[in-house]
Image (spheres, rainbow, N blue to C red):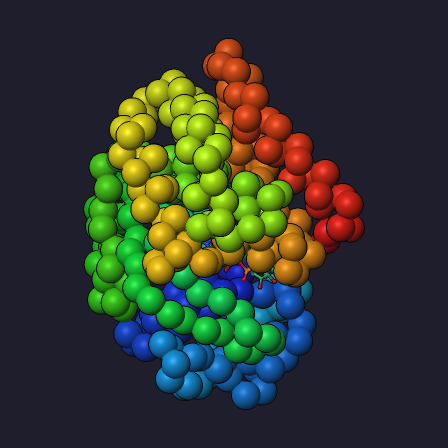
Length: 313
Ligand code: NAD
């Protein structure tokens, strides 16, 4: 299958590398000039659980797409949430009536953005527990394992969704079809909606914040706000199960020492965050449904305040 990875950062390189190793024709698209230049010249350097390897993959800047006849069957979107609309605009030259588009970004409500650029029958949404990190231009680090859950936006897309699941699984990406992917998306958003913002604002790792006496109350309140909004969208979250899942991350001998991606984006790399698509999305949807979401609103404002203080871009 001909696959384009729209956003060849950490996750895009993971999916691109694994799908290419499984025999697919993978093309990377990214706007980061140094990254694109190095991959064009030397290939993509991949560190897989400590083992170094290199793979040659075609890669394009968005400005180079205009005259390409790529005949892409599937685009996998992997920008940060706030970059999604620009990416969808940039890839218009390679989309045709039958190009399917899979969105696996963290956060809530991305299908509303994708729908503005892609026919609904070609849209597939999901989420992933895989991780990855960029070590520098042309260099990605892959560690651990993960999975993917996905679903078609329109009911008639189920057969294609199953084909995409098969394609990803053949590449070792451990994919599963979900009849109710919104449920998984909300569940993951609860984890991100508590740990990401709190660790970023309080400047601590998961264990230091999770093990304070007030953490559980803050987390419960935020999860309640997510669950109240989710309920209005036909998603019933098991609040206790979600809270247990979050509490399981506090173990300092497990992932407790980890600083969530939002912390890495803003505090370490001075980048704007995805807060508007996690807690901010709950605030917007809460307003629409008449649900109060004061903790999500406050956390969203605090993160924006910190972004401005640090001059994040
Ligand atoms: P990233 O910043 O490493 O990669 C995004 C890439 O998209 C960048 O290389 C950027 O240059 C490119 N890009 C953005 N806009 C573009 C445009 N208009 N044209 C061309 N290129 C453009 O981000 P990531 O860590 O790979 O995360 C992607 C998504 O996956 C996010 O929603 C994130 O929350 C989610 N996610 C990340 C991880 C992880 O471990 N990194 C795990 C699960 C989910």
